[in-house]
Image (cartoon, rainbow, N blue to C red; front, side, top):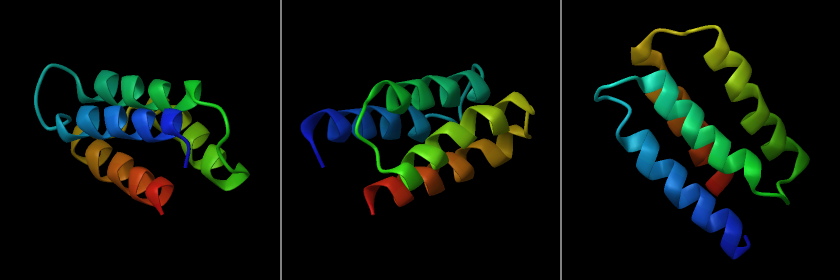
Amino acid sequence: MNFGRADALSSARKLVRMLDGPPDPLRQAQAAVALLIKEPGWAPAEERQILDLPAWLAQRPPPAAVKPRCQAVLRALVG
């Protein structure tokens, strides 16, 4: 994993940890995804998981479902 991806994952993890709190978990999740999307070099399967998140978030899932889904994607990206 290159330094840029590691930094993006670290920053996204920090945002995801705070998803339980106010003000808006969906907006925080979108910010975490944006960090990951900006970073090039993901494997096709990783990129697919990252790009599936904004579509899922656009469906306005229940706030309680956002953090577990984001955490699962981050775990998959770390390997």
